Image 1 (cartoon, one colour):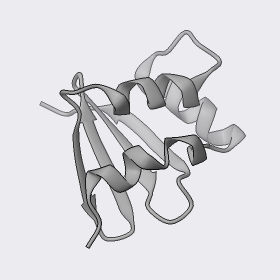
Image 2 (cartoon, helix red, strand yellow):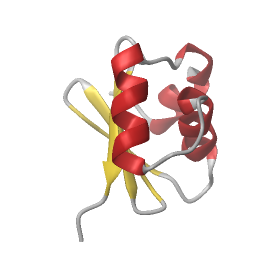
Image 3 (cartoon, helix red, strand yellow):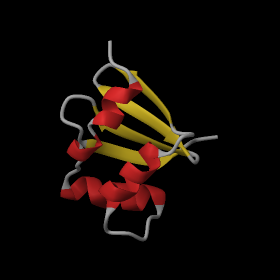
Image 4 (cartoon, helix red, strand yellow):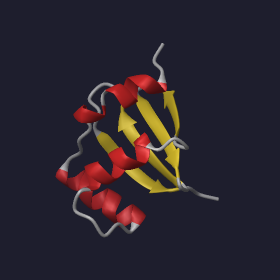
Length: 83
């Protein structure tokens, strides 16, 4: 069984694809080119709610949901939380 600490202990492995950068910037209206750094900073926050469902980690923080593959630590997508 994996715990949120597993993700936090492997933040140095966090990465995404070129298309992932474009998708995340569009979905969250980000004005930064360091999308991985932005996501890493959000995941590290104390109020981040980290859950694992199947092969993905889901990080809920500041009305955003970041999806990370649990095996490759690839940031798949991030989007604003639907209310």
